Image (cartoon, rainbow, N blue to C red):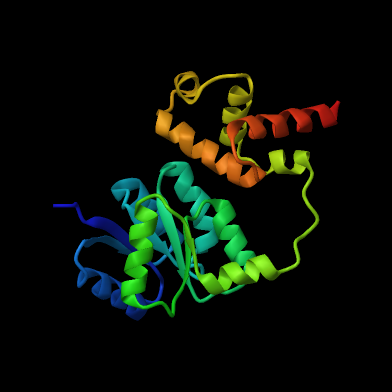
Length: 215
């Protein structure tokens, strides 16, 4: 029998949170392991319970968007789905850039939400179709310079990328930084997403180009 997907629901509206919790509890294959109402609750739950998927509202004490990178600093492999009323493109971009794996609007039905959670738990990403269309149709900003892209990396991501660019494998980087190999893989995924590249070789080239530009 397949293990149930462990879910945490973080939202500062009790009635909505209880409704999501009850709906998912009634669907086979889900276990609600925690509820919370603030950024601090989200950080505590991630650190203590590491649910398979965390549903996170944007508008809550401490801010949901602020919580995402903080959660991933504590639990790098935590899968986060934003469940919110906000359709703002900036919020969608900030959430995904911060490391969230899904962005869902609160009008979604319980069965559809369950499908999204299963998708994210299996390693995929999801953005509500209407929001994806908006992002694609919106005017793209001027492309960031390579130096700007590199500057957007966290200190740990920068450290990992430097070692990868020097020719180290994920396993060697993990040993060097005293990390698990899967954590290094997660960092590389985040790095490639932020840099807009398809593989580690291209990521290394962006770093080298950025460094050359400073000389």
